[in-house]
Length: 225
Ligand code: DX5
Ligand code: ZN
Image (tube, rainbow, N blue to C red; front, top):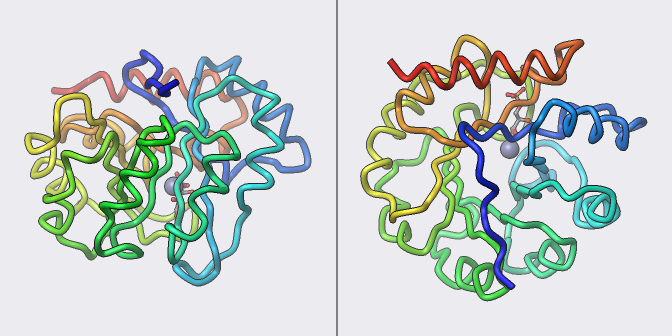
């Protein structure tokens, strides 16, 4: 069976990097109550990025607890080596970095062959022309609007030009996602530039009421000018 993207627009993908891990089930329930359908898992290996988070074991243990769409963002070196762990963990979309896999063809094909959505991520310093040849193999393109590795950073507006460049070049059905510094001041700009999936950590988990935070973000993303 092939995973399909949930029907939702605009798509909010809460970045679990910012959640309260001592109360993970409660956090997942609060996000579901806020009407979000995606969970964005930031996997960091302390090598590709200067920070460590969690891996496939943690994601797999949560898989049984929710029907949410699992959006794995692998900030790791050598994604080909670890890919099967994330497939086995039940990730619905698996995104890895072009900077970690200069020829991503095989990994993209393996993700699709496993019936999952294949994503390619691009760092702020990388030209969008580097991922252009691989766009027909992508179900999702993730634009980093901060340097990967940490939540709570300031949005880099250069990502907007990249979004505008890539959007008309995507294959039909490929989603454009943006990650880093997405909040009340920036989500509208990202939506106007063509982004459809909005990864947000601080803007949701930093608010006392997730439901109103998500509603406000969705409303601001809907104002496409
Ligand atoms: C950064 C991660 C992001 C980050 C987003 O490396 O990929 O998903 O946690 O957090 P905020 O929304 O706080 O920038
Ligand atoms: Zn991320």
